[in-house]
Amino acid sequence: MATNIFMNNQQPQTTTLITAQSDQWSTGILGCCDDMDICCFGCWCFPCFTCDTASRFGECFCLPLLDMCAFRFCLPSCANISMSMRVAVRYRYKIQGDMTGDCMYATFCTVCSWCQVAREIKRRSVTFTLVNAQPKGTVLPKEIRNQP
Image (cartoon, rainbow, N blue to C red; front, side, top):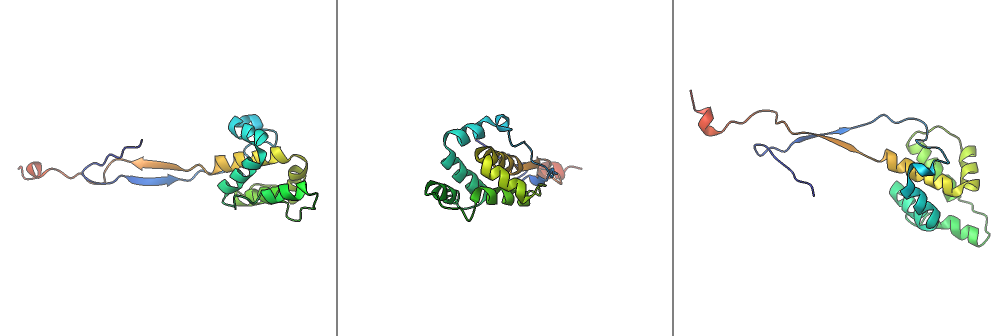
């Protein structure tokens, strides 16, 4: 439970800290052990995991199910959602890479690719807020201000 403390009925100033991010993936494609929650979720309930990851990225919750429906009915997936998500994450966070690599990872290392994308979204979407609790000016009580 958060508690707000106000001094002299003034709200504290807040400043958002923007951190410089690398132009590389924060973890490798096989870095599943870097975040065991994501690893376990991805391995044990992959359809739910992909939907959750897409939602956290701001996409439609059910978008990854298109890939699974195409795979189940042996249809060619015109819109490879796994690859598209990977490309979108690289574009948003300005991560180096190319579509050839994205296609290879999304096709042959699907679970690892989704886990890497989820770790990246989790690490880069953290916001830090600094709070300055010192008021700009000190307001003295009336009794003290009137003293000579």
